[in-house]
Image (cartoon, rainbow, N blue to C red):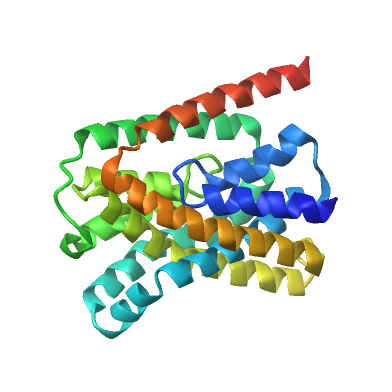
Length: 260
């Protein structure tokens, strides 16, 4: 049964990691709604699933990263700068978030607040610039927004794409920078948590459950990245704003039903 749960959670992670709906929120909410417990509903398993989406990022953006490392050194510098706030906040607050913020109420509030931010960013964006036009200040702003995404329900892609839109970026360009920027953050979190598991400071994961979840999140992630980048060339983020609000309502309804 845990293998099936792992695969389903991997699919959820792969899809929601790259759509602006918060993968962390969904990884918390799915077990909460379905009554699943154990390692499936833990930070260690969440990080394991992120390994699958990390592989998806590396496959889709392999040529981009090669080009960045060999030729586009300014973009590399901007990505490093944008990564720092998230890395620092993740290191300092990871334990606090795991113990205090993985609650349905926090998720519901974050879903609604960021939905409003996304909607306003979409409406006010001039959508004229691309990644190459970013400045150091722009990178810092997007990096700080990524740091906020440590709160469940915020969504790394949602808040960073919104920041990019506010700075005048085209939606697909903002998403591309967001995905490139998330690569070292996800890799760092996976390595750090892997070290904790090896030293017995985090929940151990059954290898079979790990492999099933990682494989599912990898495949789903590949499809989600490709689809979302094409989607942004033709459509706005409005649908995802509505989705977030509806999901928040469902979460509040679930809290009420479970408490009554």
